[in-house]
Each structure stands twice: as structure tokens, then as C-alpha cells.
Length: 418
Length: 207
Image (cartoon, rainbow over all chains, first blue to last red; front, side):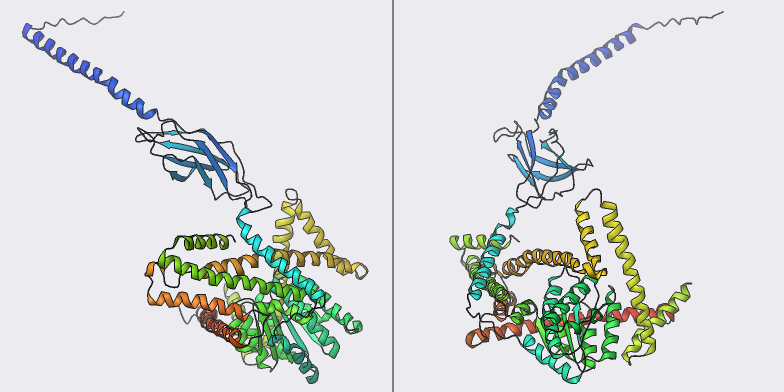
């Protein structure tokens, strides 16, 4: 059985009823006022939300670069106007490999291009632009995923190519000149003049020659230069019937050194005197190699030591050990940090460029002499621009002369293309 | 086991230092251990890093790796005297590629970057430079020019040219002197490291 609750009967007095009605009237009035003001608020909000995004956003790979640039083009928002414009700027966003968006830049109103210069050729990129207004923003449609590409020609290096072309042309010119029989002058380089004497000394003393080609592999041009000198040294050794030993720290250097010495012995007409054991691999470990060479020096007591190639912390250890056994030492490297040690502890030192000039100097061949003369043309160009650039910079900063400023800008542009 | 390692390390360190007195059997033993272990270590490293890590893992995605592998196989032809001459091909490839790659690097660093760094106003921007800056800029410009003159091989070092070249070699030698002092100080840290090992880790005399 369901029992329904009894309804209560409430009797409201007349005064209270009047007050209640008055209160309701006030509430309705306030509510109607607020309702009337709402359309204004809505219209303001609609205005700010109506800022339009950019359109026609296109991302394309920058042509003729190293693959690090992607260019963006777009049509600015229709609200981007000089008069009554709503747009306060644009934000460029990038997603890499579908990851989280990264803001790349904030651009001023009116911008319609952007160049991303930090792209990597193995990544997939997508971009979008956010149009900024006072209280709102609008995001554009994102570009299709794309990658940047590395072209065969890099336009940034145009001036570098031009200067290299001039020097290469000079090399060819001098090579052809030398081939026609014209004598090309090269000044004397003391360290290289001493090679024959140093090998002769070893022969007279009946002691061997030690050749250390540095601790880098065949992918270092200093090692190549060292092996070129080795060709000449081993030829002299073969002629004098002296003895050479050459511990190396790279297997490829061992192979190349054996080939070089073998060729020299054959050129000297003494292939029978050549032995593969003249060159032996020790270890790739820097100080393991040094320990071995040091031991070799004090046990074999070579009369002449060549330290030519790429050296690091071992340079002074080797040079001092060689010095302690009274060997005449000819050293050479292009590493500025090691040259002071060689200069301090060796009899002759080939400083940087002299090491690379050695092959041409020693060979006396037209090709190599022409190459050396061509390099001198390069140095001449460098000297000219050092003077011209310094003068232009001094005048430009001191007196601010327009044409000189232009020349300075151009020079900076040329030599920054490296 | 840790103590055993410390004792072995100390034994080898002192053995190598004994060379400072003279060549001896202890040094020879340490030298042989060092060379043997390091050579073996590098074989393992090169195998896992180069052969396995680069070639074996990436052989399907990167066809060019097969070219490198083929050149490596050609190098092994040296082991057979009858076809040993084939090993010259990969060697020639390495030498040629190295020369080509380095050519542009040297153009870039030895010419372009060098000249760009030297182009600077001697008087300073808007006369704002201090006396020291002006002297510094002057030394850089003149020093670079004189240094280039020294390395110019096509002309005898005589007369004004010779004097400029001598100035160039003076600038180079002063630079080397500063570099010498700086590098010697950094090498001292190697010695300090070994002494720290002997007196601290091994003997516990310093904490």
C-alpha cells in the first residue's frame, strides 16, 4: 500500500506577497539588462576570433645548398593591413619527424617568407604559421611532410669555387710552363736540404735511419706528405746501402709505406735489398706506439730520425728520446701545437706548408713544381686581399665612405663563403 | 679484484717510468704488455665498430657500404703474392679521395677563413678602440702578411722581401713560444694524474 504525503497548505500574508512581487520585478529587470548587454560582448569576441590565418602556405627545399635550408612562402592574413589591421605578427612552427611542434621564429606583420636554416637531410619536416592578433590567433593548414635535399652544387661556396678555379688554372699554367723546359725557381728549404746529409751521416756511422710517419691514417694529408718524403729518403738510403726501419700505428700506412720503399729500391736498381720487415705495424694505440718507438730508439740508436706527419702529445716524447741518443732529427708537421716541441728538440723542422712543399722540392718534377708555384699564386691572392681588406675596413670604420663600405661588404661576402 | 687491478696498474706505471732511468727489462715487459693488449683491443674495436657496427648493420640500407667492403677485400689480396698488386687499387682510391677532400678543406680554412679573420679595421670601430686593441689589430694584419711572405717559395728571401720574411718567422716563433708554455702546462696534468693514481688510489697517502 502506497501512502501519499499530504500536501501542506501555506497562506502568504498580503504585505509579504507585495514584497515578493517587488523583488521578482527587480530581478527580472536586472536579468533583462544583462541579456540586452550580451549581444555587444558576443560581437567583440566574434571580431577577435575572426582574424584569418595565412593561406597558400608552401614549403620547398632551397636549391643549391648543403641540404640545411627549407623555404616557406605564404599569402598573409587578409586581416594583415596597414590601416585597421588586426594582425600583430606571425609565428612559424615546425614539426620534425611528426614530433611536437617547435616555434622557429616570430615574424612582424607583413611577413610572407621564412627560411629554416637548421634542417637536416635525414629528417621529415612539416610547417604551419600561426597568425597573431591582440587576443586571439589563427593557425594555418600545415604543409605536407617533406625533406630537405643536398644538391651537387652549393651556391654558398661560389666564391670559394672561383678562387680555387683561379689557383687550379695557375697550377696548370705553371705545370705546362715547366713541361716546356722552363726552369721554375723554388727557394731553398733548410730542412729538406739536410736530408741527403742526414742519410749520409747514418751510412758513415753504420747506424740505421728511423722514419716515423705520425699517428694518423692515410686520410690525413700530412701522412701523404710524409710518405712522399719517404720516397726520396728511401731512395737515398737504397743508393747509400744504408738501413731504414719504420714502425707505424696504422695498417694502411704500413701497406702504403711498404709500396713506397719498394718502389724506391726498385728505382735505385736494388730490389733485392728491399725487405717487408723495414716497415712494421705496432698498434693503433697512441702511447702504446710511443712506448714501442722509444724502446726502438734507445736499443737501435739510429743516427738519423725523421718525424714527419701528424703528431699529437707524443711529439716531444719522441723528439727528446731521439735527442738523447744523439740522432740528427728532421721533423715536420702541420699541427701548430706540436711544432714548438719539434723546434725545441730537433735539428731541422718543416713548418706547416714546408712539409707539403717538400714533395715538389725534392722531386724536381714539372707537375709538382707547377703545383707549388700555383699554391704561391694562392698565397699572393691571400696577401692582396689581406692588405685590401684591412685598408677598406680601416677607412670604412673611420670615415664611413659609401663605396668603401660596399667594397668591405663584398669582401666579407666573398670570404665568408667557406 | 679491485686491489689486484690497482697493483697491476701501479706496477705498469712504475715500469714505464723506469725508462726515465734507462732501458731495462721491466720497461720492456710493460712495453710488450701495453702494445699487445692495445693492438688486440683495437682489433676488437675496429671489428665491432666498423665491420659490424657500420657495414653489417647498415649493409641493406646503404648500398655504398658494399663498395667499401669490396675495397677492403681487395686490400687482403696482399696476402697472396701472385695477386698482391691488386691491393694498390684501394690504396690509390684512399690517397686520391683524401687529396680531393682535403683540397677544398684547405682552401676553406687556410685561405678563406684566414683572410676573413684578418680583415679588420686598424683604428677600431668609430675610433672607439683602445690603444691595446689598435696594436693588437695591427699585429694580426702585419703578422699574417709577413707570415705569408715567409711561406712564399717562389722568391728568394733577400732585401725587403727577406726582411718581411724574417719578421714573419719572428711572429711565428713568438706564437710557438706562447703555445709551448701553454701545452707544457696541459701536459703537467697528465703527470699529476699518474701521481694522483700512485699516491692516492694505490698507496692511499692522499685523499
